[in-house]
Image 1: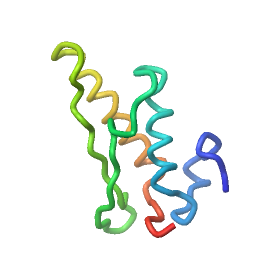
Image 2: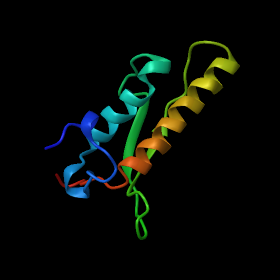
Image 3: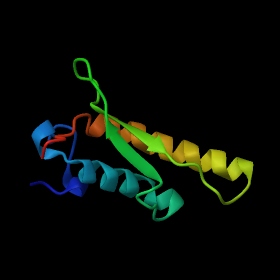
Length: 96
């Protein structure tokens, strides 16, 4: 299997992508701005998809530390990472 750090959108096939690949890729995407994130910060779950739409969505946990502006900025960074990864890896093989 291709490592997630070497994947490009054209390399990604639904059968290749696992939930842990997506979680890892989200963490890699935000690491430069936020540092390491916990698995509990972003949770992914299956959704019904029509056509080429992503078959997964994410829940972003609320941050307990910092002021309101920091918490909003952090949430925005995580949301942007989730959207970027959804474009890159729209389909997850939930069975495998």
